[in-house]
Length: 90
Image (cartoon, rainbow, N blue to C red; front, side, top):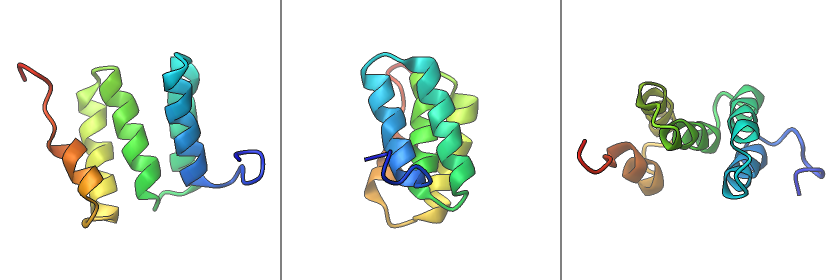
């Protein structure tokens, strides 16, 4: 699918999620950053970037990315869920 629409921020962001699933972590983050650069106004790109940072416990970077996603799509329950999520013990 990505080969058919390589400029799609949403598809690039989803690709990053799949890279995480197959434990290609460095490629995941660079792919999430690419998605944001493809479309600064894509809530999906910012959401997946924020989650990528959160999976690395880099919450200083995760929270602003998730906040940006929420500002672009304030009605998304999925984005709000992840923005409000707290790590156990946090």
